[in-house]
Each structure stands twice: as structure tokens, then as C-alpha cells.
Length: 74
Image 1 (spheres, rainbow, N blue to C red):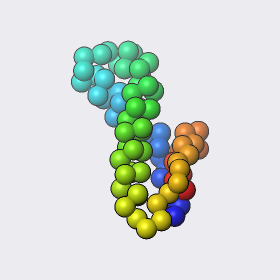
Image 2: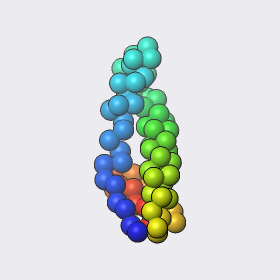
Image 3: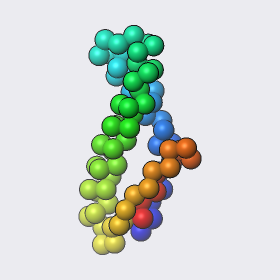
Image 4: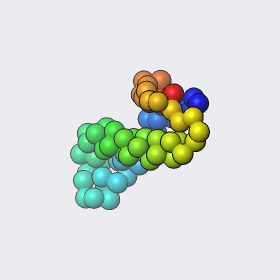
């Protein structure tokens, strides 16, 4: 099974929003958004892998190509 998820970098905007909600200024939020987006991506990746492991032929691994805006499960 091969699963391709696109727009893996789309978590930056929600990360900025969350950081602003937590009380940071826009400037501070933009500086820290990349790290939070990576944490969010890791969380989503783990959740997706758990769901995919219920299939008869689950993926053996995952590659995140952030520069290409996609995540590949194989």
C-alpha cells in the first residue's frame, strides 16, 4: 500500500493561530510556528500510521518531503 498526503506544510498557519491564542505576538508566533507545525505533523503522522496499520497490507514506513509539500507512506 502506498498513501500520498499532500500539503504537509499547511500546518504553519494553524500553528501561528494556536500560538497567538496562547498569548504570543504575531512576530513571536511566526518565529515559533515552524517548531509547533513539526510537532503537529508528527502527531498527525502517528495517528494516520495507527489507522493504516488496520489494513491487511499496512505501510512499512513514512517519508515526509516538506519541501515538496507531501508525506509518503509505503
